[in-house]
Length: 198
Image 1 (cartoon, rainbow, N blue to C red):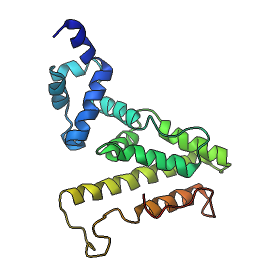
Image 2 (image 1 turned 45 degrees about the vertical axis):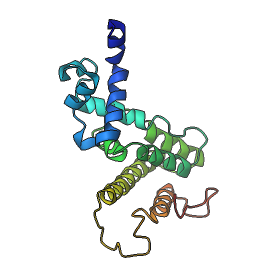
Image 3 (image 1 turned 180 degrees about the vertical axis):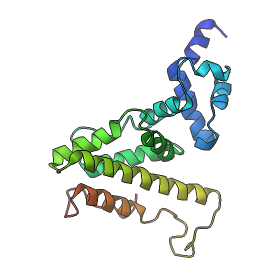
């Protein structure tokens, strides 16, 4: 392996990309600095040249997970759906972003997008509403991912004898839309229709 190739593998971006790939493979509980270092064929201490701590690395991953959310002229509901979809696109994405958000690590791009959409809609108290909506998005997405994990491991949830037992997330899209619109203060008819299912 040439020195040039080796150096490109071990920059900050390479570490974050390796960590995201491992997150999808093993999940957040098993995402360790040692495992990431093993993927890059370096000692764990080498990672700390790029990230001061594991939490700093997780904050970078959270920023990458939420990097593609809609900004600009999207409505609050469309923005919230975009954030949730970004969390679902990565294994344990909701839990990871929630953990960094709780510790106030990483950027605030997701909450800023909600705030901007609220301002564009003329909502009152946009800062407080944006925080409340982010709390709801993160909590809701974490709940859905937990149900999906339980289902993937064959866990039987109470009430699974219902006709929708084959879909543990049935009805939760509508719950999500209702929660966001309630927190936005626009439970009235909206230009974006509520969804029954994803």
